Amino acid sequence: MTRLLAALPAMVALAGCSLAPTYVRPAPPVPQSWPVGDAYLRQSEAALPAVTYRDIFRDPRLQAIIDQALANNRDLRIAVANIESARAQYRIQRADLFPQVNATAGYSFRDGGSGTTNAIGTGTGGTGTGGTGTGTGGTGAGTGGTTVVNTSGGRSTFQAQLGVTAFEIDLFGRVRALTGAALSRYFAQEAAARATRLTLVGDVASAWLTYGADRSLLTVAEETVEAAQASVRLTDARRRGGVAPRTDLRQAQQVLATAQADAAEQRTALAQDVNALQLLVGAPVDPALLPKGIEEAAQRIGELPAGIDSGVLLRRPDVVQAEYTLRAANAEIGAARAELFPRISLTGLVGFASTALSRLFSGGAFSYSVAPNASYPIFRAGAGRAGVDYSVAQRDVALATYERTIQTAFQEVSDALARRGTITDQLAANRRFYDAARDTLNLTNARYRGGIDTFLSSLDAQRQLYSAQRTLVSTQLVRATNLVTLYRTLGGDSLLDATGGAPVEVTRSAP
Image 1 (cartoon, rainbow, N blue to C red):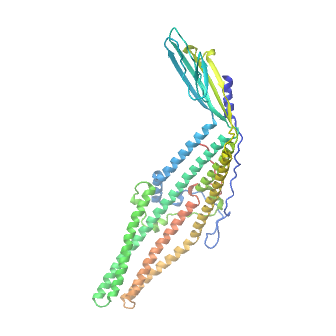
Image 2: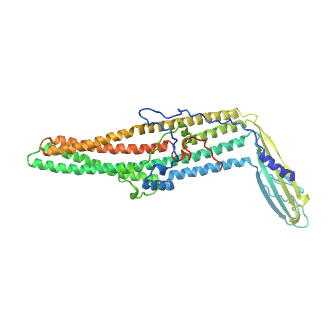
Image 3: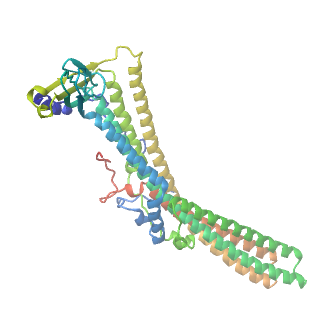
């Protein structure tokens, strides 16, 4: 028994060679720097500082909604549950690296006469012999049997066993490769949850800003309705006085009807914006946390400079997820290759059997056995080699997916930078257009009341101002959501460390 127990640590510590290809992170299939040119911001030499969503989304109301979403969003709960599932799958697979030890005990009693009593066993395949009969036990643990023949009175039989069940000596690294693959898939699931969190934060911020823009558009429509109603009243009075034709009244009514229809549409949009926010948050949203308009909401969105090289994309959660998926596929090649080689299993059993409880652990009652075995498939019609080919093809799929993920991330950041590089000029131009349209309306109305200009000129000026107001609101929304997009595409909270924006190797510890 001492020799068997001493051998167990050696069996556990026996590490086989790995047949998995050595993993080397592929070079990012994108340029080393972001695009430059007229459409892009001038690149900063300073590294990007560490940020959180609170550094970018500075409005306390938006922060409160994001916190609520992080606590209640169902997609995020699903992602967390998937992490727990992947962790459990890894722990299940890791258990194959260690021998399974089973303990069994049995008791039997016969009252007089003669006959055969068998001890209780588990499994299939092991055998144990006692007395004049035979008991059958199981694979790995196996069992021993004790038979008692007694013609004069009742006899009791006690049995205790400790067995190592079919522990595979991992000479070719099959089990370790599968364990490594399970660990990588766990890390990939963790990265997927961080990607879900990043997307959620960005979506909440965008929905909050969209509500602010629709609120501003509603205000514009309502103000236009008031102005159009005043214009209709004035024009109708001039028509009744014989000063203005009926066509002037009808044109003024057209402007009024357009503004009223837009106001109704914006009220619908606001209700839908609230519904979208509540779905993201996973709970009702306090109306006090909603913005009054896009201008005051956009002022609380911070800038995110882009003065880093494109290697930072390696830390984006979806890129990290794709890389760990590639690592898992790479490890599974080793497991498939190991399937081509023999499997060696070891079974051990130590046990005690006695007809008296007081003598159960005495010297004569002890027995042990070791039953190693090896198996090798002689003919599988090429299934083993096909399994290797399949795992290699899956690795190639994972590699292409990883590279495509990086390229997509690069394109998303480049698009966001292109928009960021020009939106300031566009917003300034739209503000100037709005100021000019407002001043034109004031001058045209004065000229119309003075009999210098026609009513048509006043209506055109009113339409131009209305269009300019709506365009300005839309541009303000584009600028604010562009900052949200930069935060999300550059990786958000997971992007940067406290020392700056340099990319680093992402590592994780096993659960």
